[in-house]
Length: 283
Image (cartoon, rainbow, N blue to C red):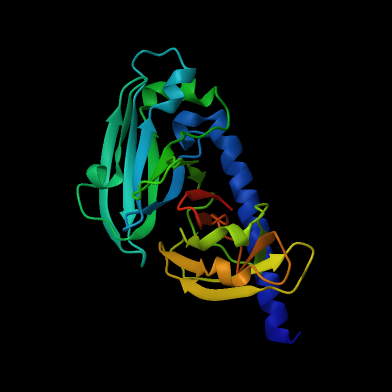
C-alpha cells in the first residue's frame, strides 16, 4: 500500500470513528433533553415503489406511535418525498394524522402525479413539541408504514406483497472501505422465470454496486452484474433465472458488494414464478 492509499485509509477510519461518537452523543442528548435536541425517534424511513406494467404500489400510513400513548391530542405530520429511478425528486407532500388515524391508498394518488416505472420514496415524521416528553419516554423507536405491491396480472393464488418500511440510518453520505452483504434468502431458480433485484441508493453520492448469484456452498458465481446507482436513485438488475438453473444446483444465494458502507444495504427482490405468481421481500 503506497503512502497516499495509507493516508486515505487512515482518514476513512477517523471519519467512521468520529461519526459513531457523534451519533452516540446525539442519541444520549435526545434521550435526556428531547425538547432541545429533538426526539430519540428514527424518523427517516425509506422504501421502493413500482408503477410499471407488472406491479403497482399502495402504501398504508398511520399515526403508529399514538397507539402507545394516552394523549388524545397526539398528532404527527408525515412528509413524503418521491424520486424517480435517476434520483430526481418528482414531488413532496405532507399529510397530518390525528390519534389512531390511518390512510391506505395508491402511492400515485397520494403523490398527485405520475410516477416513474420504479424509484424510491422517503417518509419523515415530525411531532408537536407539546408531546415530545411523552414520546421520548418510549425510548428508541420509529414510526412505521407498510408498502403493498399489487401484481397487475390476475393469477390464481396471487396475493399482494407487503413489506415493512426500512430505517434510513444516515442522512449524510458515508466514507469507508468496501462493504459486503450476503442475503439469507435461498433462491430456487429452476422455479422462476425472472428475478429482479432493486438496489436503492438513498444517499446524494453515486453508489457503485456488484451483485452475484452463487450455488450454495460455492464461491464461484453463476451470474454477476454491476452498475452505478445515482444519488437518491434506484437501479434494477434482472437475472434470467431459467437460464441459470442448470448445473445440478437447486438453491442459490445472493451477495452484494458496495464501494462504501451504505444506509440502506438490503435490496428488494421480486420473483416471477413459472406459474405466474409474483413474490417480493427484503433480501
